[in-house]
Every structure is written in structure tokens, then in C-alpha cells.
Length: 372
Image (cartoon, rainbow, N blue to C red; front, side, top):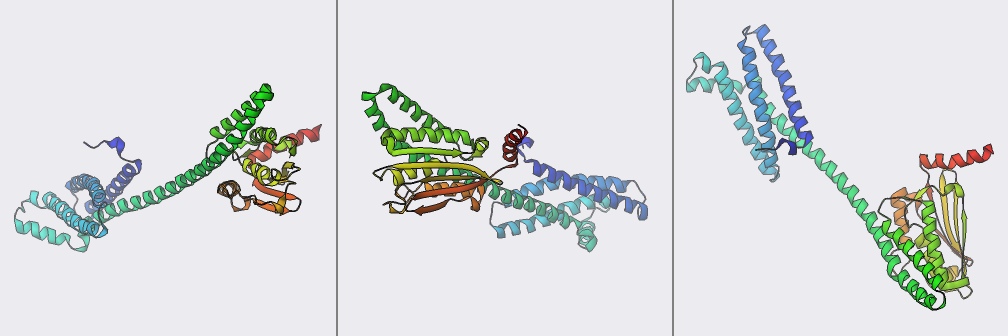
């Protein structure tokens, strides 16, 4: 027993449309035959019986095509040639029964003459019915395959982004956790209150990292809180050698950005710019609106071009390169990172476009300020 609920909707629609098309064909042809050739009611009854038989065969042809589709193309072609011949014989014989057999033409020669007559041009509609039904099956399968490929591409892109984010999380976890635990260990003996504060900041960092998922965007204000906690923990390790300055346009705090998009830039500034410099330095984070985009920049006054390692996270294979790929994947090729180096330090910047909703969100505070 076939469960009709399991049949995809598109196949039900195709079946009904084919039956409707042939219902119109049989109706028109029977009316014309009745008006011009045979003015008897049995013309309509014969058309009805043939239509009912055809509807049954349409379903069988679709199922038969589905079975053949599993095999190689030459087997499918041979199978459909055989199927078309069988369909012609059955439908032709049924028509012979309705038109000739019931009239007394019951001999084999009568059947043969009837079938040979159907081989003329006017009788080829049986072959057309089979070919059209099989063609509809292959057209639907073609578009289903195209749709499946697009869906697979979308799923692959999502998995790729999730993998990149997973790599970013793994970059933070072992190295950063090891240094932070060492800092906490030192603080326990001198300042338990400070140690508890660092533990809280560390838990907030990892909660934020674990709650971040693939394409899910977060508000900039939450991303900045995450960066604040990260810097505060690093300042426990580096002390006054590490200074952090934020220059953030307050109207941009509500925009949404990919999670943990700033952390690799700040980490590289700490690791390769400030940490190797004896006197330390300052990391500056700038966020401001430029027309219909938001400009981000992380810069430091550390070693710059004199650093032994450039800011590309070559030691782990992720970081700057991964951030660049995430930005390009989310916002397009124009959103990639721009890196500048000099004797005065490093600067990494990027732009992201504003959505219509974010433009309105930023515009409202500006209008209120002008009104005041």
C-alpha cells in the first residue's frame, strides 16, 4: 500500500496537471467528433473510459520512470522504448474493444487492422502521451537535482563558517587559558578578591565564545564587553605595560557584527606588538560611521615592522587570515582586512555595510540630538 502522504507535493501536482490537460484534450476531441462525424452519446462514454485508463497509466508511467532512473542512461532509453510499445498495445487494444469489439468485430484480423490503423499519424497520440508523461518526470527530477545542489552549497557554506568559528574558539581556549590560569595562580596568594574578579571575567569570555554560533550576529556592545574582559585579563599579566583605549561612536553600539570578529586583531596586537616591546604600549580600538558603512580599526604603537613575527597568526594558522575569510564570506570581497605596518606600529582595519534597519537605528539618536 502506497502512503500518499509520503509522496512529495510536486509529484501530486504534476499528476493532477497531466490528468487535467488530457481531460481537456479528450473533452474537446469528443465534442468535435460528436458534432462533425458521430452524433451519438457513446462517443463521450468512450472518451471517458479512455481518460480514466490514461490517468491510471500516467501514475504507472511515473512509477516506472522512477524505477528506471536508478539505472544507466542506455538502460533507461531501452526501458522507455519498451514501455512506450507496451503502452501503445494496451491503450490501442482498449480502444479497439470500445470501438470495434462491442460492435461485433471480434476476430484477430479485426484487432490487427485496428492497431495498424493507429500507426497512422492520427493514432500517434498514444505514443505522445507516454513520451510527455516520461518527459515531465525527467524535467521534475532535473529541477529537484538543481535545487538539491543549491541546498548542498548553502549547507556547505554554513558548515564552513561554523568550522572557521570553531577554529577561532580553539585558538582562544588552550593558549589563553594557560596564561590566564597562571595569572590567577599568582593572584590567589596576593589578592583573592582580584583573583575572583579575573575568574568571573574568564567565565564571561568562555560563555560568550561557547554561545556564539555560525552565522548568528551579535550586537557590537556585547562584542566590546567581550573585548574589555579579554583586555582586563591580559592586563593582569602585563600590568601597566599594556594600555587600552576605545574610541567608539555610541550610535554604533546597536549594530550587529559576527561574534568574536575583533578578538584575533586585539590578540595579535598584544602578542606581536606590545608583549615583545620592553616598554609596552597602547592598543587603540576605533569604531565610527563613514557614510553607509561602519569603520573598525585596531592599532598599536608596538614594534610594528620591527617585530620578529608579523600579525598573521602564522603559529596557529588561524586568527587574522580566518577573520579576513569570515568578513569576506559574510559581507563580500570588499569587507576584507586592510593591514598597515610602520615603525610606529601596526594597524588592522575593515569596513562592514549597514543594513536598512541599522541605518534607521543610527539615524534616530542623531535626530533626537538635533531636536535638543
